[in-house]
Image 1 (cartoon, protein in one colour):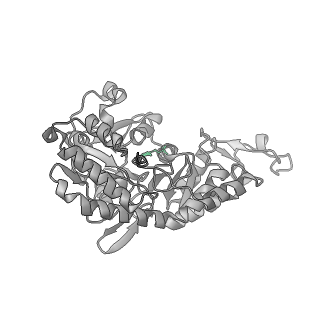
Image 2: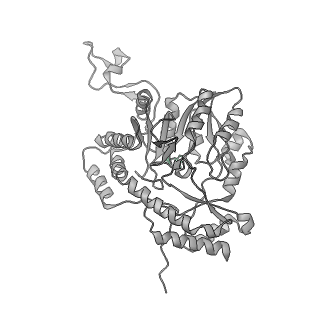
Image 3: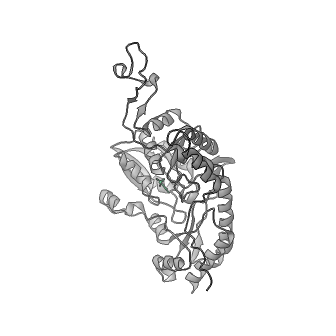
Length: 403
Ligand SMILES: *Cc1c(COP(=O)(O)O)cnc(C)c1O
């Protein structure tokens, strides 16, 4: 019997010998956490995306939470998040006691647009809109300059959920820009979960050009504690009668968390960051092959395309399938593909439809989000795939929709 072809998940990490060696080296060094690799990773990442500051943290969710804490988002405030995203984008506002207004999305791309943001702003009512959190879904950039104009007009801060967009770029006007360079936003939040474009197992990063925000976030990720005597505010607690700081002194001046990223994982991050461009090139070649092979399956199956200004790092390869016209449910299609060795996933169940948010905000109608959700399916795309894998996936899809 012929050997069954290897199962292709929709996404997975690529770990190479030098990644392993980097982690082993860190593991046998003096520091497992809060060592020299943390700052080295932050500096290398800031340089890679063109930001002045980068603050490493334990995951992408912590990155989003740190960003909103640094902005003093709190009870009574409103944060706008798109309905098509991972729950964490909205949840970080709730951690701070703020309320979420969900923006609809473009039914094809799943992205927040100037139009859907405007409609969401109209639903904020008399409350204070503190932040807008667009998501670069699948790595495809949102129209940042246009979203920023709308946020600015409301006195709100733009914070990018760039968890899909490590390495994504954009061109507005004739200017080439990198996601995270902070030209149009206050902060950008990244994730290094294994399915993203590079990984530290768990891990996250916030980039900003504002030194005050960077400083606040680095304190908040470690309990709100400072060890710098120049910042001490309680002499009787922290200083010797001579006025010098006690050697054991630290001050907790605000309520923070333990959101640190260990030195060990920063070693992996440094190693992975060095190969990010290669990973993205592979994703680009694989995506190009999908685009060559998929057109005959239209209009039943159509690939989601990137907006013209966006040069995506291609975190996901999403197709829109007309399940109604096909006469099969999405579960049937996913099961059939799985039986043919092809893993798929749905990005995402609209967050405003989750029971927690329905209970809080009632049943909202966001037709763009529903239309995107009804048709989307993510096909395998990761840097460890081979070109022939794409042919195999498309052949499996062809059989499932044609037979
Ligand atoms: C992965 C992801 C997050 C959260 O990142 P974690 O590192 O898993 O906490 C947030 N937003 C989006 C859009 C994501 O895809």
